[in-house]
Image 1 (tube, rainbow, N blue to C red):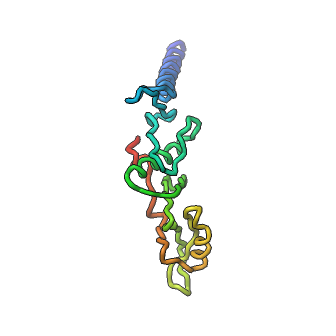
Image 2 (image 1 turned 180 degrees about the vertical axis):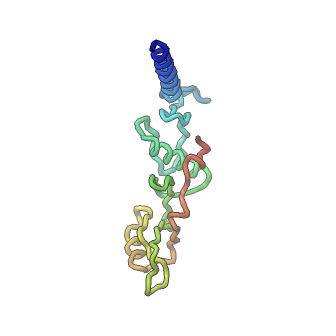
Length: 167
């Protein structure tokens, strides 16, 4: 019977050691940057926060952000640095994808049935930049402005872990 207690104690000790190592790795510690200032580190284990580019519609990183919010902000910084000039963004957690909103784009989810009048797939839902609320009603009514590009939400979006090369 003593043998079992020693095994249980060993398992508990190993588990506590792993937990300690994990907490140490994700602790919000400071690291000096090239300018001598302290870099802020992600509490989620993603390393130092990236610098938000001037003029980008991206809020500051906060230690209180959840994992999904931090991923969305990191994607936004990378996309902006790569030349994407979006107006806003959203994270569809059910699809595990982040979508960048542009003034000339509306993301649509198509229904399975076909509209008998137009012969096209019916639109089940629409998402666009907040400035396009009037256009959303037009699209729902079947009047799609030529200046708006409809993108199938099922075929678009950014997978954050892959895009950011995180594991």
